[in-house]
Length: 184
Image 1 (cartoon, rainbow, N blue to C red):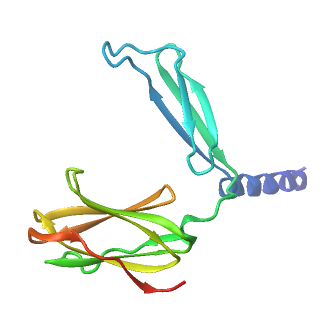
Image 2 (cartoon, rainbow, N blue to C red; image 1 turned 30 degrees about the vertical axis):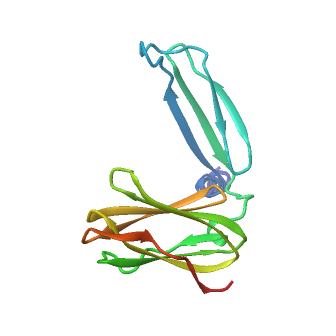
Image 3 (cartoon, one colour; image 1 turned 90 degrees about the vertical axis):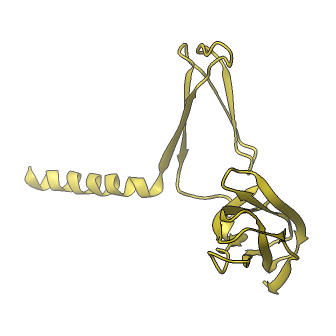
């Protein structure tokens, strides 16, 4: 009897431990309320759309306005890894005064948009470029008050955001001219 238990127990334990490596669940939930009365809304349709591949999921709120949806992944990413087509480096130097360089690389032809926002979320500057595969750098010359700024680089609906610290305010003009620093 003891031998039989070992044969069953160990394969079960191995399968149980290995399971999280092959699947992952993420639950998204919320409550739907009327914007004026704040009353919970029953049977409200919620559409969840994956903008990368146009998958659509629909759920409905319950009598208390609550809804939830669980995404389950089998661990196999059918799409190309974002890092393999797009990467953003931390600006250098950081902190900086009066200027810094923002570097990034793309591995396919794309429209790339670079934006800089202050800590309040106000856009200070933005530029868009149609680029070929390669490594790029764009200078940021002090513009606006000293403090924490955020730069975002967007390509094909994917967005990377990094933080930079401007030590002294200025009116130097913001984002400069982009330059290719290396090919792919």
